[in-house]
Length: 275
Image 1 (cartoon, rainbow, N blue to C red):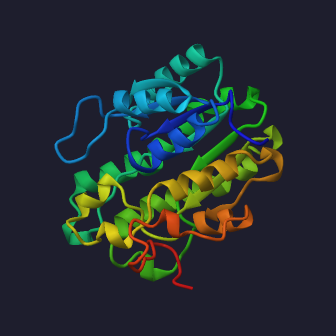
Image 2 (spheres, rainbow, N blue to C red):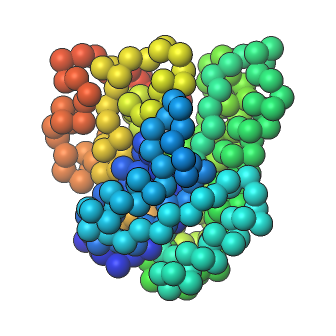
């Protein structure tokens, strides 16, 4: 499959950042995009709403369905999936992008923040995939793509922020299981993670610990996602892809265009080895 023309993508957290970049890349092919996210009015610190993103998708050549959705609410998730199916006639691809982050040690991680990360990252990913599964079983080349890292038991990833790491690794373990569970149905289940830190609006929520100049843009993840989602589902499942590696396989050799500032060094993302 060369492109995503006519395919329907259900993207959680699609109003900004990586989720929106994936949506816009698919829209350039003429895809249908369901933007399932919470933001319908501008956030004081995080720009972008589902209506704004929908307008960009339409301008890029796709068709958009913006749906306000808190993926912690499984009843609302099921309703949103039903609306998406009714509107576009099915769902071909699920992108589990929505995520909550708090890079805090145990004493500084309030239980409400712990619950938020577990409910959005692990439970929400499970709920969205579960609700979309009947539609995926009817799709021609169905994919589930989850934005989560290669699973690891290396203590260095857990010590600084146990709660966040567990929540992201939980998403990855879902991928590990789904690849085998969904294999008889021909549904691909893969994960994608960036090699470097990505410059998104959420970066500001980390208190300036990372400067945008040391990051890449979300476009690199979007291009990597496109390369995965256009593969044959039956022969591409159970992988924990790194964006740079998948693009190298696709023939990309110059990554400077993805850098916010090509003159500055890049910071390696969490859960990725420096080597």
